[in-house]
Length: 154
Image (cartoon, rainbow, N blue to C red; front, side, top):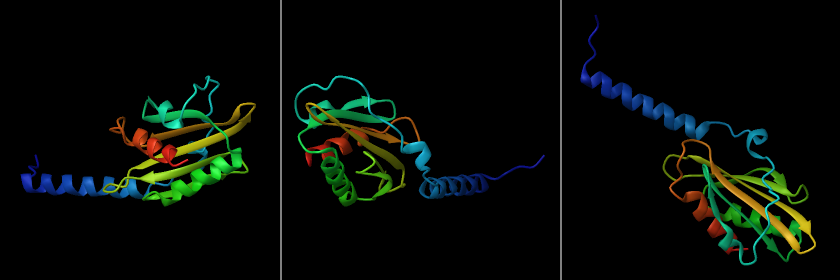
């Protein structure tokens, strides 16, 4: 029987943690998995977008009505997203009516996926936006905070 020293166990643990960190940071983001429809048929209550942020499993979502055209809403969100730290465009366009971004955490580089979808209604432009994590089960409010920040800038 082989006995492994505690120093070897610690070294193996550190190497495993480093391998996990590298995987999290370098794992490819498949647009087919994340650039998906997020709109619901739920009624939209009146008021600012930031008042309609709801926690959902693995993230947060919001839906609201805006006076701008669908393209204007997504163009503005694209500008807001791309000025956010560690955020990049993954897929979609204003012309398509849906855009998805990847926003990574500072230290570990955990990816969160934010998808915004717009549609024209008689009352204005309906915006449905979802921010969700890829790894883990709890986001500690990061996705809701991101939506509040982005939506407050619209």
